[in-house]
Length: 352
Image (cartoon, rainbow, N blue to C red):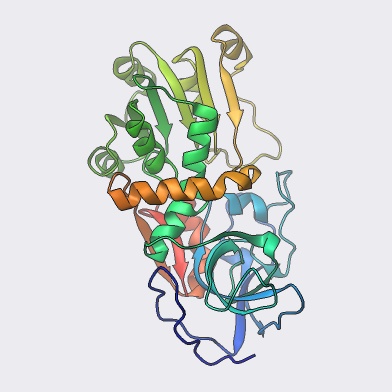
């Protein structure tokens, strides 16, 4: 295996300049987090560059994703995926370029998106690859649009929310990497969109950047009264990324036969023991609500078509995206604290 700089390969986007290090740095999970993972839960380790065997592919990572789902992947709490083993690289989606392939479906120079981890190199198999990238967009745009956040927004809204023109759509964490897309997609479907967010600066961004009809700072507004004023006929679709008291409030503003998309629970500090808030069963029954949980990894078969649709909208200028790029693998251990603290402005990622 030659670890000198790869030659120029024919790909449909301009790859950033990258090198091929002689060692493989990894950000390993070394302690189970209590709530949001902190920097001390991780350690930087240096390993030999792996050598691919039969059916394996060696990938040089270029952009590492930072996603809310990683909190669950790092935790020992019951979750939809097995926890990351201590002493192993933190599970993460990433964009990388193939260095060496022993699978005929992939060639050196292919640009791929998949579960490649927080590390310089990933030794992977086809089942860990989500998408081969071919769109004429910068790589950071593709990670924003086709990563967990963008595809979640598209599929969760269309499959679970099922909004119709003229309906009222409310979105929590409306300026975040998921919510910013949900608002734009809902608006393109003819919805009246209301964003809930945590600062006046984010309210302005929701209105001016993401095209929401209204936006509310839930930390300073009296949320129940404000929602009644903005949606006097009630809410048809609530796309929820927070859970907790915000959900309790919006739930009681839902119309008959409304739809709730449960996409995240960012406001809940711990699920051990499980918190118990106001009882919602009667609200669900009397309002005849549909309340759907959504995990994007259940929908791998729909991923490519969703990516094509998101790319088309972005290239047409009808879908805007924002990215927040940290430079260097050493930024990874504190990245989830930044994300959960709301310090990012756009899809958070790490450039190598």
